[in-house]
Image 1 (cartoon, one colour):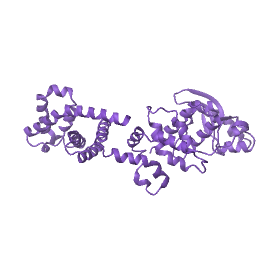
Image 2: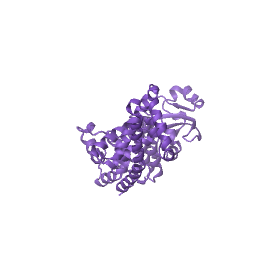
Image 3: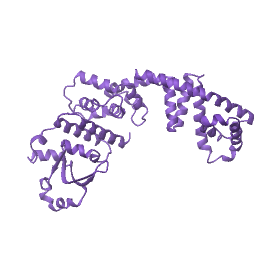
Image 4: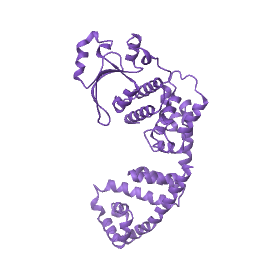
Length: 377
């Protein structure tokens, strides 16, 4: 997985929590554990993405320089902070100086304050010394990963972007690893979280994200992750052998230009349905385009005969060529000439494929409609 995905997930989660009317004390705890989770990875400091939310909710506690425990020891350095836009502070982590800060959307924040994150080592030292008191000095709650993720996803509509759902499903075992004592977790909470995360549209988005999708072999000897991911692995076993799902994946891969994986899935489709014209066509198309990409820079001379074949073919089928996706055929023209044999034979082969193409597109649209109806039900 990439670090920007973790950063985006934490940002989206903080935004989501700040929109929900929960107790500020609970909110500070939730945000603290989200950033603690982010710190397990090689991520950047991302507070400024949600600066307004963190200021509004009170997670970032403002301080004067003289309130820092090391101020007396190094007044000169602390007094020079007014010259900086941003600086980390010496001593315990969790403290930083914010001068003039640019938020995510370019908004300028003129702060000129030290800040301390709730729950950080600096916060702990300030609480113990009596410099912080009242609500901001209330102790950290134990992390309950089930309830935290449930609070994040509970307000997200099932029809919205599945980003939050499938990322938290994938990363939930890692969040649990941070937990020393979750306390009592009710069956109702576990059931609701599973109901919200274990849905076909969530699993489909997860499967299509190679960075986030878990692999069954990685969890054979791990009890909790294996149990957690069991519904996903069961779903994968079903759809991996479903020609309709394979066809949908192939079309999406073509849209993204990932012809190598499309070739692999088309070959698998042919194993499941040897006589399926859809898989035959897209297997051939993927193969041709991949070969073309490799051949064009090096073997252009070898392709002159093939190009002439297609020029002649297009003369006969010009009207249809304007309507259907001619890029497929132009890509085929980049094959080495020896693949075609006689010119007449080559024209016959391509004409046959071309005649099938409109029907195949119609068949795919019907297939796509059926797949949508099945997954939405």
